[in-house]
Amino acid sequence: MEITRPTSLSEALDARAQDPGADLLAGGTDLMVEVNFGLAKPEHVIALRRIDEIGEVEDRRIGAGVTWARLEESDHRALAQLSRTVGSPQIRAAGTIGGNIGTASPAGDGLPWLAAVDAEIEVASQARGTRRLRWDEFFTGVKRNALEPDEVIVAAVLPERVPSNQHFAKIGQRSAMVISTVSAVVVRDDDGSVRVALGSVAPTPIRALAAEQLINENPQPTDEVLAEFARTVSAEVTPITDHRSTESYRRHAAGVLARRLLERCLAS
Ligand SMILES: Cc1cc2nc3c(=O)[nH]c(=O)nc-3n(C[C@H](O)[C@H](O)[C@H](O)COP(=O)(O)OP(=O)(O)OC[C@H]3O[C@@H](n4cnc5c(N)ncnc54)[C@H](O)[C@@H]3O)c2cc1C
Image (cartoon, rainbow, N blue to C red; front, side, top):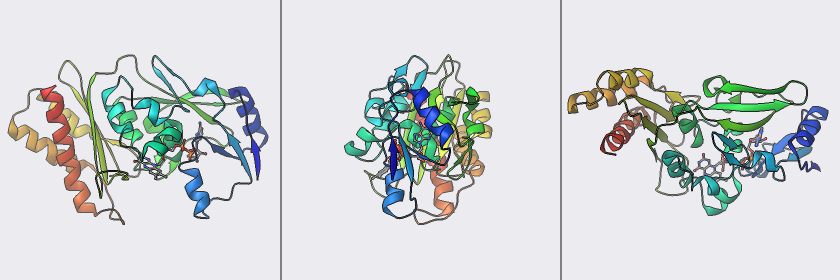
């Protein structure tokens, strides 16, 4: 197996342009699992870990190469909360937000947060330079995204204002080292408006727009409105039954989880 180790983004884009079939490797915590199970047989790997330009958090930009260990210390509360739940300390030391975005698994714990804050994904290629896609343009299906073969994910770019009142939680088959059965992020702005994003309940991360509207019209919700909010979230998700859970459990849990997080935001 050939391994290219670029030390700058332009070297990486050059390598990608010359061999668009090569596999990009960040922390390897998704890619190497595929290799170990014989599902991927890379002939050429472009290793991204030596590229400082994608390894920094700067103001509104989170570099694709930033690890979960680093994001555990994020000022964005829900991002820090979710980062602490990813795998084990070893996985968090190696795994990156860019790898989570690249894999685009419905269960990727970083993705509902990107959806809740309305992040853009910045990608670059040698031929066309840089472009940014809204999160809902980037994630196109189960483990599918809009990245072109010659592109590299550079960063997640946040909007100018990200409300500080935000919470993440996930449900899984055990309490640690667990892939999400359902995950959720609720963000509440100072004017009482909310954004509700969910993972593992649709092919891509989703926003529960009808539930958001209900709370935006009732910024100080009564118990009845909270119950209606949970029912609305449950009605908006489109989960499947698989080896981790059933469609009906996921649907129920999505509503319960979203209501719980909204109540935490209301109490903050
Ligand atoms: C034991 C274990 C536990 C885990 N627990 C969790 C969990 O709790 N929650 C969770 O969400 N995930 C979990 N994961 C999955 C994994 O750790 C995360 O998805 C992680 O963020 C992947 O990042 P990485 O840097 O290791 O990606 P890699 O494995 O290096 O890459 C993953 C994919 O993204 C592509 N890629 C990487 N960087 C870029 C880039 N800059 N541009 C374009 N494409 C890129 C790669 O080509 C590859 O297709 C777990 C994995 C393991 C093995």
